[in-house]
Image (cartoon, rainbow, N blue to C red; front, side):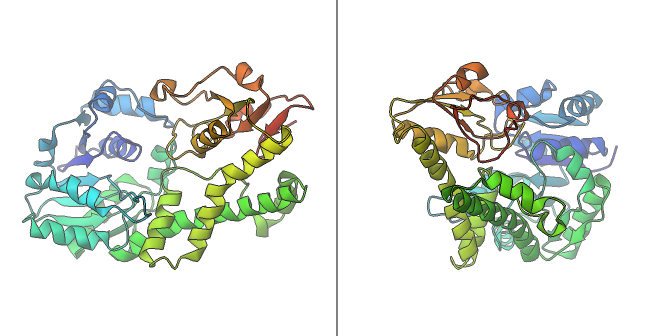
Length: 401
């Protein structure tokens, strides 16, 4: 066991929980501080609240070892020398960062941030310049802690694997903070951390997500161009990438969602004083794709969706996962309802009780409809069989004959 104690704020979430498992495995006594008592209860009973590869067995092992526990009691922060914050900066209705949310959360914890021996590490995405603002605010409150930033760059569901293998970007407001956060991630990962200035680390995370978001928008724009011309984008894509290395980054078309890509692209746009035209264009393409798909569906069904029953397959934002955050399937459902259709949803991963207002049905019932939309390409859907006259809108080109 190491001689430092870690507390993770927001510790039972998608970012905090895998991180806590890894810190506990590395020998740090780790507390997961979370405001949600039901999540705390699940974790303490060795149950993962979301899908994570290797999660159940590794969570059980560190709970049994006594190195990890979850709590709703913030006083655990007082005796922790390392405090990892997994609260990010969302965007508001004007697509600007809501930094105040983070400031308010920290204000509720400031009485526990009392020692220069404490290192506070921000782990979730923050807007450029935020670390310096937070450092100044903590000083203003009389909190003598050191402050660092190490953005997570993990994929939902594979965090435990990626945490060990990916190089971590580390930064801090002083040399001691940088040295300590670098030492922490050297103990957790197999890759040498990469040291950046705070602004560089903040921008690096946003650049990663904005680059992916724009890449997806390119493919989604190409999809619309091809399909409007009566061409099959899926066949074009397969031909373009087949044994042609220069096109390996050419993404498939698909509903581009999740908790980070749009949000982080808009944070970058706000930081650039709304001169990030590529980012705004990507948003228009990606967020406009559901309406394009509905137009395809409406045309295929004779010009109207009113009175039609539509099966919507997949409500998560990514395949074979239960994470529904910002999933565009919900937008498709709303658009269908607005046009007078009845919508039957199917998803084998999503916990249906979290969405009592949505009608979930079995796969056979969702398929026995006037038309089907593939919201996300779960592997279960790849070999579905459709009658020649049955309408299926599959932007992902995922259903194979």
